[in-house]
Amino acid sequence: MKLKQLESLLGNLQQFDNPKIELEQYPTGAHIASRMLYTAENSFGDVSNKVVADFGCGCGTLGLAATLLDAEHVIGLDVDDESLEIASINAEDLEVEMGLIQCEIKNLRWQGQIVDTVVMNPPFGTRKKGADMEFLSTALKVASQAVYSLHKTTTREHIKRAALRDYGASSAELRYDLPKQYKFHKKKDVDIAVDLWRFVPKPKHESSS
Image (cartoon, rainbow, N blue to C red; front, top):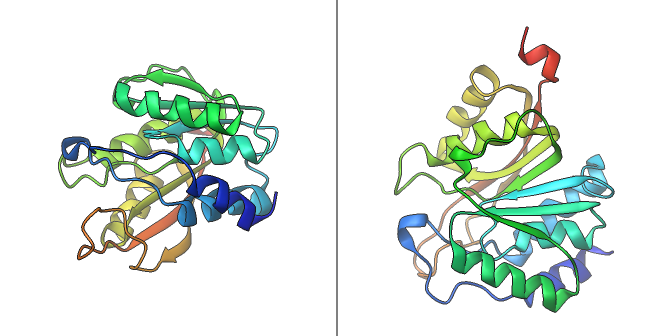
């Protein structure tokens, strides 16, 4: 599938009618999502025929992008039941299958690296300090191949240092410094500069040594 086609399909997905600010629910735009997943597949082979988990999936944009790029199986996880309902409708509209699980990421009890790739647009931690790092820590525990994640540019050095020192990444590669005009917020006067990171988890035997 070509990038423009992927972006067009994602642009037609339903999004939040009434986003919950306390959950930092902001839609992942089709422009960012399509490039994020297209890069994951075409530069690294991290999507096609892989098991992909979308952490904090919201309306399902990232996970559904993975299904359109021929992931073997995609699981979307979110604490909010309304988001999961929208994600389910979006999957039906695209005529693809995506498993959906309601849970808090910090309470996820998967044992070991049981998915190949995690993709996520986590809470930035503006409402609940450290929420972004909870997502990253859990993702690096369950992914065997790679974690793709969006984070505020202002946290760049902290994200890299924590991923390598504390959360079990063998590498932390900044893929894009995404321009400020890509807005996650509803208000037109609010810009957030975000980075797309690719993290590679340490092999399980290396993590335990």
